[in-house]
Length: 280
Ligand SMILES: O=C(O)CCC(=O)C(=O)O
Ligand SMILES: [Fe+2]
Image: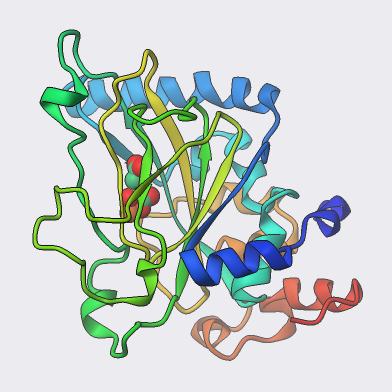
């Protein structure tokens, strides 16, 4: 792990925002040269997947489980400006449970937001978890980081929409998941920003009336006992990964028990944090 991550631990104001609003933004989380490296790799995945699956070039698409498709994506798994905030929120018993890159192509010429709208789809993440778990609010369980590779610093650029504070209520406040609820806001961020959000936050993607596709790399982190939400084809990455990355990629040294009663070697992040004098 890069020791410079100790300079980027969760700040009191980020923690407060996350607890109160259900999200926060880390500006300049990744440098522009890394954005420029990731963009063509991601564009090629988008292009080839659309071709392979016969998808409409204009459709908004989630490409799941991209983590193993290029070494550049692995870097973001424990990225120094963001990863410390994941353990700051969830603690050391964590893993990557899901990745998806979301492509929101530019709306066809002639369409206007005033006429054609934002194509919203409000939801909480994690599907069945929201039916199986009791409590109001239900437990957090996971969060996502979205790394923006495109500019979404103004509205109508395929922004990620959120309803601040809504992670604390199970029910969507409204009866139309495609309408804009009172209090909803677009998260307006330039390329290179990272957006952290609680899976319970009511959120939505939106249509893109800007001049470039909106590209975001989403990394989902959860407690280790949660099953991955995609195929997590990461076997080929493991030999070159250090012990903490292996933890994050779901390695166990204690069989099934390693996911609920971990030994030290199952969760080297715990020992590393102790060595740094960090107690969480
Ligand atoms: O593409 C978006 O802005 C929405 C993505 C989303 O719903 C998610 O990452 O869970
Ligand atoms: Fe979502």
